[in-house]
Length: 376
Image (cartoon, rainbow, N blue to C red; front, side, top):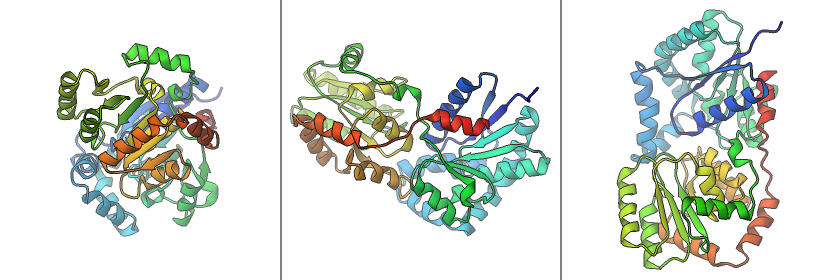
């Protein structure tokens, strides 16, 4: 009788992409193999203060407030010296914690969803002298930080030929890198019709006769949302707007006030939502940051995007993918974003143009393929 498969999925909360990918893969594996057990593990325990400050809190602050700090850190960590120095600081506590988790859970397989955890997991396995299959799932689709490929002898799953070439340039053998479909939540893969869109608009209280602009930016909301809404009000926009503010309660409160003061403007304001797929499907255009998970989700629903911001170099490839395939624009100015949205939604041939472009766009989202590789 074959051994029951038990996976440990290690992630960090530096952005939503790592944990969202892990969740998608968990559901997919358990769909194919209901007997498989999967345990999600934050690679930093509560006592890993150094790791939390350097990575989790550091990532949040540098990408949302001290914008110049992240590009500096990103460029430095492209070099092996800085990678090694940082890992030496993180490893003692992190490896000890990971060893404890492995001893308690006794997994057959481990998947790392974060570049800083992979070397720590490898060291923990080696110190325990265990034969555990370790796979690294690279969550950056195109412009992949070098630190992902710090270890040369691990199995890597990547989303693109561009990512594979980066791994090979970091001296990882080509046979160790396999290109797999994007890990996409099944909710975004379900086809929908015009009647479905009408039903969703009714469900969420949107004007059925207006097109919809959706603004989404992850947990921290979308930069420039207030300026865009103010211009919508000033110009008496003929389209509806949905804004997801995440945990930016100040912005949410301000926009809710604007909604009350301007009842003729069809504005919908949200904090966190668990029905983003429905808002994407009922929208006609999406203004967003260039996070990989959300970008692929939106494009899979065949919605054009305006990218207002991307994280230095790391998300540049995401932006370029949308722009080069003519299903997105990169515009930073809130005023110019409004102008482009108005141009989009006033164009009677807009839907036909987008349909042609999306027909030419190829996005492989058959996550079952990736699950089968992990289950091999």
